[in-house]
Image (cartoon, rainbow, N blue to C red):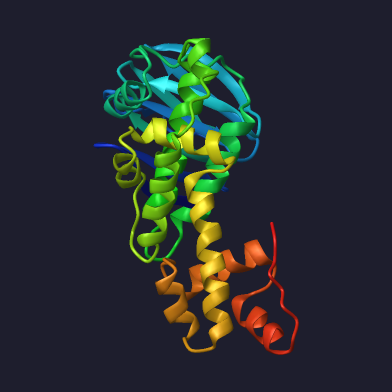
Length: 293
């Protein structure tokens, strides 16, 4: 059985592309595949152990063997690569255009990165968890929220440039913070536009910062990402509306900025520990569960 899901990730004017690809059937005598060339990097994260795989670079066999779960591979697609899958596999693949990488390094104050160097056999728990976070978003009805996708895109690029792009160590230690007016304006803007589609780019412009700087400075200032802060505010607003018993769950979901009732119920339960309908009924009975976590 072959599984293939795809999604596009926002990264400024350029976009990243992610896909989950899996084959659970036998892979004996499979053909050698020429990997398409382009001004981009291919990043592959293994979600499960991959028993046997062969890889050629410029006509030379450079790998014959397996990849462990959490293994990471990065290839420069301006070069000639060919591969052969000889056993079942399950992985997340990212296509990162050179333009997206250049925009990120420019916005974050870094020098242009020529290469992403990842040694064979490298395992990367950070990339593994980011890849896992993408998997359910690929199946989300109506598409994943842009605000969340922007945060994941920036996290991917920040980690890849720091870990494999030889970014200067002083940049990875930089601990800038928002000025008080910037923090206030960012929070005000998110609350004012809670029911609308909010983008990281828009909030950053309100604070006169690039997306990369704003995302890092907001977390340094508040201890959480802008997306996580807004989700918390959405849940608090939802609890307030649920207590009023005047609107349906669908109306509350849309007013708080969730894509639909299903999305609202899933997030509410993950944060509070119980579905919104149950929380509302318990409140009526006198059990005021304000939740936590």
